[in-house]
Image (cartoon, rainbow, N blue to C red; front, top):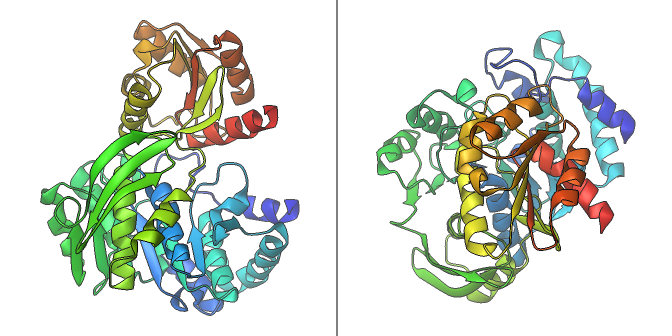
Length: 432
């Protein structure tokens, strides 16, 4: 497994690259040629394709659970991983085994020389093509694929989606996708293919025309055609009433924290109905949602002190996280935040969105990435907001300091980047 990982790491990883702009013009030529040499596996099963600024991975997990509860064999492609690379491709919820992953990498390594230097694929293109190949090899009935970045030029877009899902549009990754919500919507609309069924979770009707220009056969938009009409706090999660065209599901238990998960659930359920062409049986819906997990998303890992991790990595996600803390964890006596983020973020904006002014301490840290914002910059931003802060570069050491400072009835909240959350999760789970 280590040799396979070393080979992959020798390719450009867009998620971790140092540059603040694309190193080469965007193109699907490399991944198209790669999948062609693999026999175009992405054409051997129907694909449900997801994009959006926030909520993609959780929505993909919900949608996969709904398809599996209907008896389908389901492949799921998500990114980035939290702790192990295997997590990015799963079959009926189980990550690919080390042995199968190594075999897949060996196939890709044998094929790569045929591409030539001018079409040398990057890290994410290899993972995507490999996942599509693995799903074909195990003969899945359907694939749920999450976009890595944007949509139009994302490697996953080599597939033609039967159902396209857009969770929402916020200002994020503007160095790649453009400076406005309209430009970002235009990039994400690239996954919508002529004749596909679009499930549009974004409620801004002014953006709808951008997606309609891609020629979907049908458009279902949140609130108009589907919605989460009731979203109540329940023990360990939410109790929802979900509406889709022609169906209503009451008292659906979802074991995830955060009111924002109701919108994700509505998108997933609408996408499943669009795929099957009819509403799902209520028992199927109840079973599927009750089984959903979403590691690293408002995940409680321990108590006394209550320790929660969340991969909020942009202001919109940070505001959702702060709202969840205010609603579901307001009984804590004090808050200690562990925050690390990428350098394109405005640390003051992120800390304000996280409601950091109510924290008794911010422990600033750094993601394991060349694009990391220095921990000292995050600490300075917290200090400028009147919050006590210290900078500790090591995520593990930062979490240890936060736990040492917290009282038994406090909240330790780790956030700001999935890379920070992933490293913290490994450490915290080992302590249990």
